[in-house]
Every structure is written in C-alpha cells, then in structure tokens.
Length: 91
Image: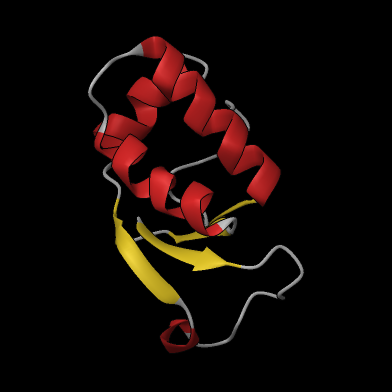
C-alpha cells in the first residue's frame, strides 16, 4: 500500500501526483497492527485507506505506547508532525 499525506477536507484526488508520498506499507505489518488493535479490523489491506488527522494521532499514540518497532510508526509520524491525514492506495 502506498501512503500519501492529505488534508482532512480535501476530496480524494483523481491523480496521486498532487499528494505528498510518504512511503510503502506492507501487508504483513498491516495484519500485525490489526492484531494489536492499532488499525481497526474494518480496514482491508486490499482496499484504499483514508485516515483523518485525528485517527492518525490516535494510531501514533497507541504505537508509542506499544513500544514495538513498526515501520508504519515512522510513516505516520510525518502525518502527525504536519497535522495531516493519510490516504493509502492499495497495491
């Protein structure tokens, strides 16, 4: 899944070239984060993902509390610092 920064109020663009790319997120880590209740079970790795700024902050704080090394923490930290949401496009 490719992850991009997006404003909460911004509609999903038709082209990702207008968004800031922050990295890739693999299925194995996605599943691990669901097992640890970091990412809700209602999300599916094979479907696009949209997280608001508030959801991003909540996930980031849960990751910090968990104190496990997840690559996703580095990616989501960028969104927290810039006070933006995340849009993930399924591979």
